[in-house]
Amino acid sequence: MFSLRRFSRELYLVWKGSQSGKCSIMKNKLMRGVSVEKKLLIHSNSFSRMAKLIDGLQISKQIREELRGQVEEWVKEGNRKPQLTAVLIGEDPASQTYVKNKMKAAAEVGIESTTRNLPDTISEEELLEIIDELNQSDKVDGILVQLPLPHHIHERRICNAVSCDKDVDGFNEKNVGRLCLDMNTLIPCTPLGVQELLKRTGIETFGKNAVVVGRSKNVGMPISMLLHADGRNDTDAMDATVTICHRFTPPEELARFCKSADIIVSATGVPGLIRADMVKPGACVIDVGITRIKDDITGKTRLVGDVDFEEVRKVAGHITPVPGGVGPMTVAMLMKNTIIAAKNLQKQRRS
Image (tube, rainbow, N blue to C red; front, side, top):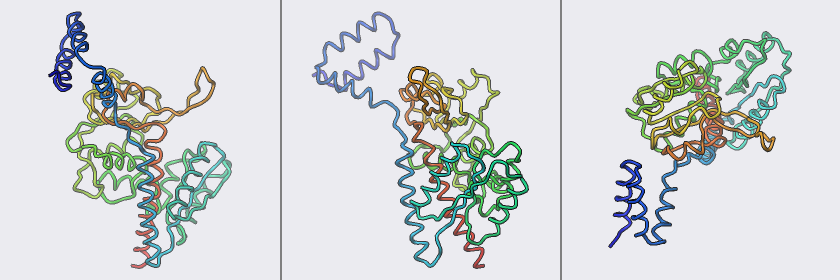
């Protein structure tokens, strides 16, 4: 009897060999000996080998439901709801959309929120005064200063002005330092979201080779820290062997590093940077990049990531889409950090 298992094995041996005309003849001969039903099954199985989609929307929904339960329990214990204040400077449409989505997520989880809308003409001194006011307020648990800032305002100075205890973005230099030392801290939301995606998807990281493409201080660097740090310590990190690539990594070297990676995390904002020929079969590909491009044919704009999604998904084992991958997780982790900050601050007040 010509079983499907036997057929698959023999066809694999043919494909594993050279692509000579003789091999093609052998392959055609094999296919003639298979029924239509088995051909259809073989065809469908080839599609099942496509990368498994890591659905950030669905996972973030699960997390928000868990967080809503935590907030309800927190309030039942006699505490007020956590409070998140966003500071939005200027009228950049993208920033306005991001803040709106964050405030919507806060409402879904049960977090009280407010947005301080400020003109882009505000001085750095005035902004620092507002942040100090929020730092001192017992009614505020989390402070989010939406980036980017106007050019006349020093971003690092503003991030450092936010109280470490209320720094739900995790951008204060003290929180960054604690992360680098693998200590308990408020972790930047996007890196924390990547970590959560890997863990909830069951991606093995212990001793695996990981490549992080991008070295920004808010995304690439903290992702690298979480991937390589010791899982026995406070950050509950992932014990991978990490290589960091960036804009000055030669293209051929970037391809070489990526081909050896079990996990690729790209966060550059360069569309199509990660190609299928750069990906190890079965690797997990996390696309953090997001860029709005214009379609030359339709004239419409669309969002794309760093990864050539349609081609890479034919090689990878797991892959995140853009949009719908890391983005929703970033918002969910902001909610998580706000709840952590509220609980920590309550402990401090009581003590």
